[in-house]
Amino acid sequence: MPSTPAACWSWRSGKQNPARPTRSPRSSTNSCRRLQREDGVKLFLISRAKDDPAQFLFYELFRDEAAFKAHQDSAHFKTYIAGQALPLLSKRERTQYELL
Image (cartoon, rainbow, N blue to C red; front, side, top):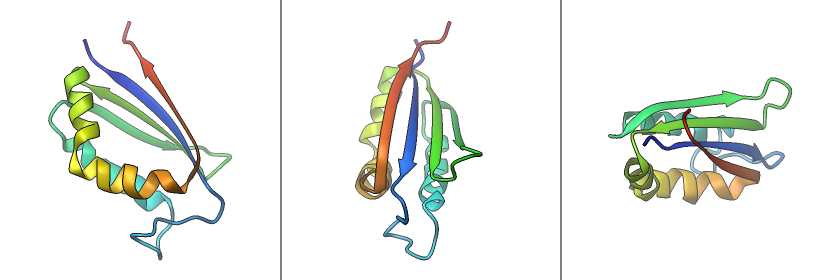
């Protein structure tokens, strides 16, 4: 069965990606687009809140739980998401959904 996680990120005020200090926090979400090409990824959407430019919604659809685990275990995820982006967040909420 497909795995469908969603996450809402809120950046801390005034924070930037330390790997790209001249760019906005949105640059970290741009690096996430690379994940769209991972084996097992069926859909990967990133949206920004219209009324709060520091808030992002990630909606992901993976082939199965194994593909989702492989995504979280990837070097790219560990470096850019867990290592660089997550420490800059004021809030991160994750929810697993099930397709009906």
